[in-house]
Length: 295
Image (cartoon, rainbow, N blue to C red; front, side, top):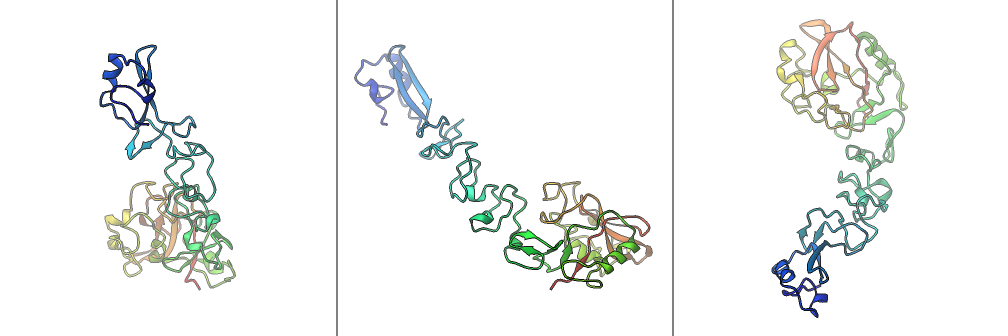
């Protein structure tokens, strides 16, 4: 609606506009307000624009951001903050800043809309690596208690062994494991280099990171400060662990099969809550997640 310079709105042009109303509207020009003139009280009213009359003021009008406005689609009465999501819609009907077909905003369209996101309510989980069928996945959903890392091709036990155990029993457990159609002798306790491939969000201990503890260097002198990992529970998962969001994980340490060469009664472990690599007595107890090279 075009605002006349001498009045609050077109509806007031026919009246003798009071001077105070005239002064208040001079150069007003705010596209985020719907201007009206109350001649009974000699008052100019500048209400928020609500073009679709859904009770929510527009968040933006003609490229101008409206302070306090919340309606992201002010030309659609069914779209407003908290409105029901319209499945597979390319619009942001609930005004959470994400299209409904990717309502968690992780850049992956929901599985039911032709995408690869099986959990469109969690931005940390999209399971894109399971978009095809393999022996660990059916569509996007893990089956058979295993997970194939799309980066390395390693097949991991998922979930880890129930409980904690000593290093010797951990190695024996993996050697006897039968899972996902792969029997005894096909699984093993991962080496420290294999275990580090699970690290997400901590460059120092992720593969190729500054931590010098690898299969090629298992002596305590290789255990530099970089091997201490990163901030406590500062990982990319919702629980703060430094592991792939897809994995079912627990708080604590995971055994590797790698012994400390300078003290073979100790072995190296990876911590889920800070991605640190450290050595502990083999008589201590830790969690176990077995691995195999993959198909």
